[in-house]
Amino acid sequence: MELASRIFISGHRGLAGSAIERRLKLEGFRDIIVRTRAQLDLRDQAAVDDFFASEQPDYVFHAAGVVGGIQANRSRPADFIADNLQMAVNVVDSAWRNGVAKLLFLGSSCIYPKLAPQPLKEESLLSGPLEPTNEWYAMAKLAGLKMCQAYRRQFGFDAITLLPTNLYGPGDHFDLESAHVLPALLRKIDEAHAARADSVVVWGSGTPRREFLYVEDLADACLFAMRHYDGEQPLNVGWGTDLTIGELALELARVVGFEGRFEFDRTRPDGTPRKVLDTSRLAALGWRPRVDLATGLELTYDWYRRSTAHAEVREHVPCSCFSPSS
Image (cartoon, rainbow, N blue to C red; front, side, top):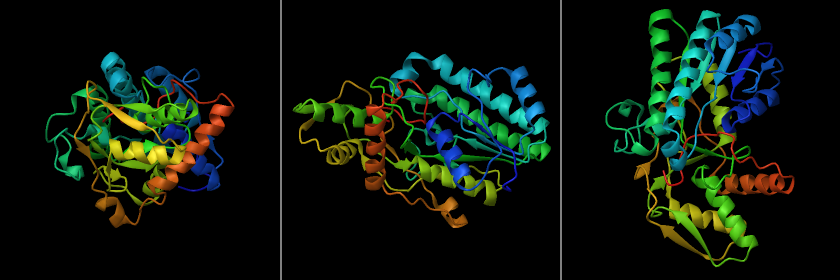
């Protein structure tokens, strides 16, 4: 991937896509192609075909997706499976037909079976039933992954897949009903602190264990993989370490300065009991994350406060996949 390459990022306004765009610009790439949903509906096959035929990108980062937490998955299952399937099919097929040199498909650790052995190895994909609270999204992402593998086998198309763990950082969204666990908790705790409240309600039991990756580290991993990986097997991206949702709440309280207590709403579903990735395959290639959780939370809270002050915290922009207690 040369500096003169034409690069298309789908979903450039989302959490992952915006971080990839920032990283590309930081490294000196200038011919970056982006489109809003209004400008290019990735669910429209004819529009996607026309776009690739006219723009002729050399490389593609497919980061677009309809995503959200447990409540969003419950209320909009058709959107989650149909939209994500259509986007994957259209982008991968049009990229291949129009001579794209390489495509990176961004999946998610949500696609692993609910009770797969921990830490999650890439070989565990499709080895058991999915987590019911996000199976619609997971099925679509699994299909996209398999499409990349199929186009590689049949046509020799250099399409690779990364499976990041739960993402957070600048560009996330903080709607209390649809946001993922970390941004939702951050907003709840910040508002409780500002209101001098005595307690914060956390969805679920607080016992599920989760792993978190700062989104700028994901962007770094995406560029690394584009340059150094050309295999069919998907690659996990994360730290390989986790903590409970209850422990995360305490970490966020420390960052915000909240000194109240937490109450756990056990009527809300917990999701998968544990989800931590085996990242040894990517580590063996020479990549590891850099931003630890404590630092990442400080950076995210700083961004949140500045965005809130300017009324720019987005309520309904899709980001990456993990749910309020999953």
